[in-house]
Length: 303
Image 1: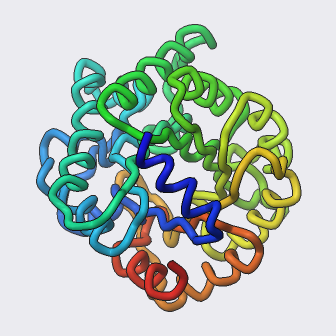
Image 2: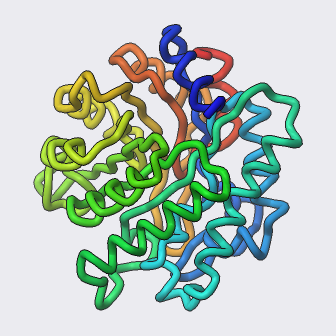
């Protein structure tokens, strides 16, 4: 709880909270193999030293919160990858690697966020995705493992549709940990900014999911070029009393299982982030394609 109090105190004092950047794409940059269906999931058991090193570098860059490498450790991603039997071990180890990075650093307090991703983005659509009761049980189990292993917060990352997003939030809320909501957007063929599934607007997604819970909301895994418009919409529809807003955008795109880097310099990313802060973002970080150098620049300028 002390790490949560540390974050809340910074927000109450009007400071900017600094998230980390991407974990999966940073591992790929360092030569860690990406699984054809589960992306960076297997790295927590095949390359633990590299995962821990990425967390440590973000802490050294000044991050107040680091996110464990559990984005692609949901059952609906591990099953098609043939890794389902390692579900509990891998989720627990993902948190422990972040905890070890925090323990070995000389930094002050750093919170650890467990990532739950209600998306098929990393693995393609899973044939026979279960009906609601079973799907909910999968998210419940992941949330419980992450909480038991030592996560301080749960972030529901890449909320792209209403059904799976709602189930993941419901499961995370049951742990009693703070739950932060990460909404992902892209444009449809007509150029309209939508949730990633292209079936709902961000406003529709926030209206449906904020009723379940969430103590902060983000535009995340959304291209830098579209993040400002998405954040403006999020700010307009997010209930003010529900908590602070933030943003962690990406730069590049997937051709599974590899991220296609379209590099944005730390200075240019920080310039964009300054605009988001001016708009009211209070929690800032980076997603795919954004690394420790970007976080270091954000720390220097705004935190």
